[in-house]
Amino acid sequence: MATTALDERSRDVLRTLIHLHVSTGEPVGSASLAQAMGRTLSAATLRNIMAELERSGYLEHPHTSAGRMPTDEGYRFYVDTLMSHRPLPPRELAAIDSELGSRDAPPNRVIENASHILSRLSHNVGFVVATDLSRASFRHIDLVRLAHPRVLVVMVSRTGLVTNRVIEVEEHLSQDQLQSCQTYLNTHFAGMTLAGIRAALLDLMVEEKALYDSLLRHVLSVGRAAFAEESEETSVYLDGTANILEQTEFEDMGRMRNLFRAFEEKSRLVKILSACLRGEGVRIVIGHEIPDPALADLSLVTSFCPVEGDAGWALGVLGPSRMEYSRVISLVEHVAGAVSRALTELRS
Image (cartoon, rainbow, N blue to C red; front, side, top):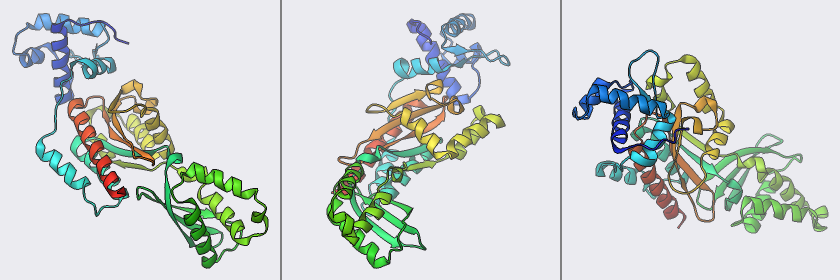
């Protein structure tokens, strides 16, 4: 871990080198660095400063090139200390607000649009993931009879988010019986969290009337399956994974296969993202800070969108460590705010 304090001249060199590397994707040599800095320092002086930055852990020296590249520690120092704020152009801000602010769009469409916008404007992978669904407030459930023993469950959260899943029940239930279960669940459990509903169903199981009341037996059978913990499978919207193919960092096919395997394994991806989503505001996780070797060449810029009384959403951008952090941070901040406003307006 790099901990060496840097003087102003070394900071300027590191900042300029990172800007050049982000722009070109190539190791940066002293000649191009001198030109970018207006030749205020000689090439020999720059080589000495770059060598010191390498010894301090902020740069690395690829064997096939005379130039140098930032390490994860170099990017971390840049993000925490050297980076200046880069607001998005007014035209992009207006376009984001327009795409996410339509009251005609259901919550699922707002979330999906957010992942598209993050991907399109960052040229990386945009994602939105639901977190802590056990605290989600339940509003409505629909039950549709399929071929026995399967029942389609359509569940709507208080914010209007719709999830669909198929459960199995032992008894042969008609659509009328499912309708009665649906009415009971909507009448007695609307406004409760999923965790609270599970607790209420457990209490109902020990009541004597549940032993002989056929409706309650059916409600327990359907309800325990519909509101089981596995029904909280986290929703993930991912867009732009093909953008990774365009990055020079991922030309190695073995590395590419490992990366796409991580994208395809939903539970694994959720675990990785959840480990990086602690705290409020924008969070930046760089390279080896991501707890999965397959993503060690990537960085994550994310923000949490709380939804009062309901599950929250975390959204962000996943891309190479060589990304335009200032622009991506501004993008994630604005999209997070727009999503929060849109979901709040839809709920009201």
